[in-house]
Length: 259
Image (cartoon, rainbow, N blue to C red; front, side, top):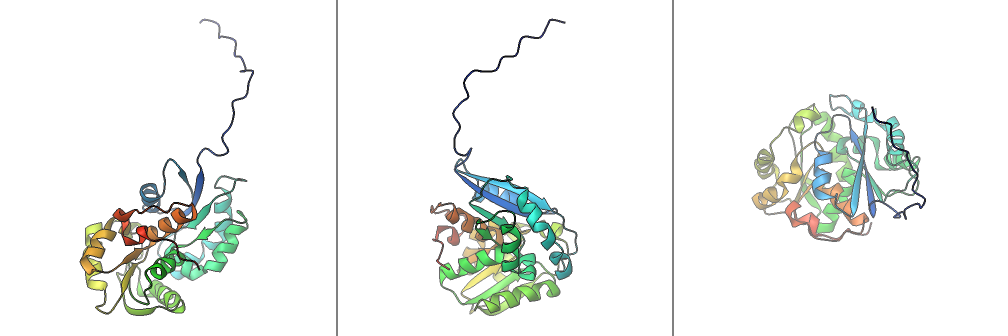
């Protein structure tokens, strides 16, 4: 065996950029999540915006009790995303858990690890999206059971929306929710949208609904807001990206309204 060469330290330290990428978006997702990472890779990540993910424990079935159990893990999950470095936005990607735990509680838990960061939840982003369209009367479609859907209805009613209709599919496992074909969601949207509704909200970050938005909007002739589409839109706007991304629905062409 030939002797190894001498290893030399280069005498000058290379100049460092402020950041590898200009903007940073953090994602806290469920251990069982199949959908959020691919959706954010399509809709948010770019040469300018990096998306950084932490997974936290979650066990099915999707009940209010199981959803609430994730709250203690939120601070630790946020702390694992680029420790000691600031983020431009951080999203907790679970719609049903967000309404059960509460936006304020989620914000406080994440701020404990990432003080000053803009926190986004799917229902919060959906409300902003619906407000961007100026609608008040909505239909809601979820994959959940009736038990898990009830807090969702209460959340949107408390935000001042009139719920013209609410349809749920009765699923208890988010991994099965992720297997619903986008084409099937287009048909479901058509059937779930009330004739008097001004827009449709499709809840759940497990659903591949972002891939079906344009089809759903064509089918019902009204705006459609989905969980991952809304959070992606919200995070893009917080990163200063005001570009239109119409391939992911009308919401992706809108500015972020002021709260």
